[in-house]
Amino acid sequence: MNKMLGGRDVRKLIVAYMNDRHKKLKRINEDPTRIYAYEASQCTRLSYYERVDPITSNSTELFQFLLTYGFRHSFENIESEYKVDNLTLVLAADIILEKELVVRMHITDSFPGSPKPQDLLYLNACLYSFDKAEGILIYVLGDGRTSEFLVAKSAKMFEELIRRARVLSTLLKERRVPIIEPSESCMTCKYYGRCYMIERKETSFSIESLFGKSKDEST
Ligand code: SF4
Image (cartoon, rainbow, N blue to C red; front, side):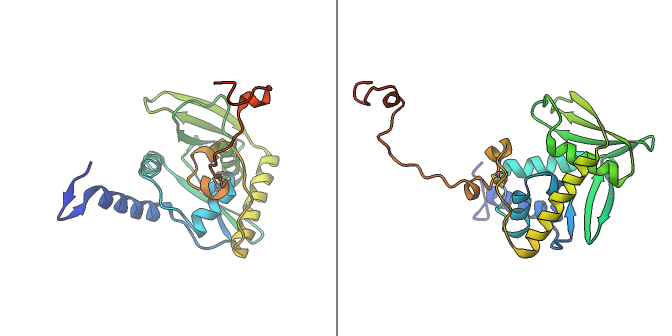
């Protein structure tokens, strides 16, 4: 699309509007003693950058966020806060079935073979915050197919999430960037360039030279 509106680029206007909505809906807070559970369950470096020095999202990320937001808010989205010392963990369950089973849903491109670690950490924190024994993680594809995993409460996983929330809280107070957490998520992360500085340089190295052939012989 390359349409002009009163001399202004329509695409740019839409992206600016979407970024504004994104900021409002994301509810990034300034208080380092209040940590959203998703900030502690995902890469803490990413969470830090999103609060302190964010990069504007591209349109794919914006639409993904809005799809997830709309999907999640079509359920109950029951918020809760869990206090540990001077730290408050903020989280939400999509549904609580029969007052017993905490449900958390995720839209996905393909079904994971096992639950994603960050989704497990998040759901487990919900089990503690809502004082429930079990939860269910549901992955939903665009065509409506689903895959479910039953998750039991784990003290170790909860300790780990609290530890991560504490580290993020401290680093936010001290304005220190958390360490890099290498994972598959880095490949699609908008902060990849900040974490992994790669310089493309011409080199005389070739795979063939490893096996005793010079670059010229191999052609
Ligand atoms: S590139 Fe990886 S380590 Fe860096 S912020 Fe993103 S997810 Fe975290």
